[in-house]
Amino acid sequence: MKNVVHESVRMGTNVSIGYFSVIEEGVVLGDNVTIGNNVTIHAGTVIGSDVFISDNCVLGRWPRPAKSSTVKVDASLAPLTIGDGTTIGANTVLYRGSTFGREVMIGDQASVREKCTIGDRVVIGRGVAVENQVEIGSFTKIQTNAYITAYTTLEERVFIAPTVTTTNDNFMGRTKERFKFVRGPLVKRGARVGGGSILLPGVTVAEESFIAAGALVNKDTEPKKLYVGVPARVLRDVPDRELLENQE
Image (tube, rainbow, N blue to C red; front, side, top):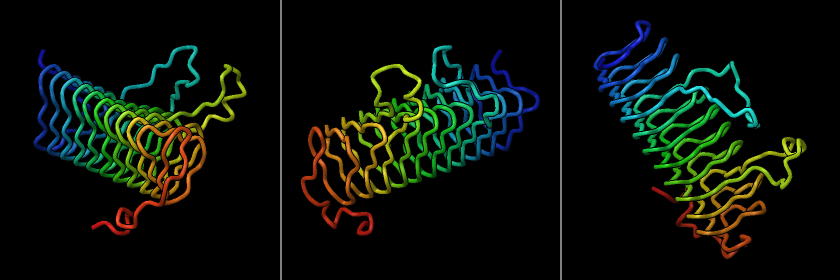
């Protein structure tokens, strides 16, 4: 059997589907959608026009946490929604309950969990893991193999370099108390975080802060300052020519 497409699927014009794909009930596909081989699109997923989906993707997957997991299944999760012009790389997994804006680029082997909101023209690089309840503003770029922990907010035009790690739990013990304090970082508009840096739980990286490669951010930063080291400390101001307001 070539493909399995449920009879209730609403399909726009000029839709192309590769071999061995499964499209479940209630899926909506816009115009000019290209779907690769061995793709699974789960029930209710809404995909806009001019979307390209590479091979072996799983879209709209329901979360299935372990019994010991702190995250429980939410039966009210809305369908996955993907905006017009989005490109989805091979072997990518996108969960139900998340929303993607227009012209998003998602690299191969990336994953985005449930209850995430992704703005327009966001880039999510190869192998990036975005956990649940993350907000990512428009024009933000997250590079290869970065880890974006649950409850993180990245505002618009943020840059996250390769292998950056964000964290959300300061407690060593496995006590219930820690759940009251779980909070990921807040990275404000225009901030840049260099390769291999670590952001500790709840820190705020201020507007247009520049975190140098390998830094450990354990306290809130100041706007338009360059931070280096472990722990991160101010080295100098960010040059005026590098600020967003001075870009063409």
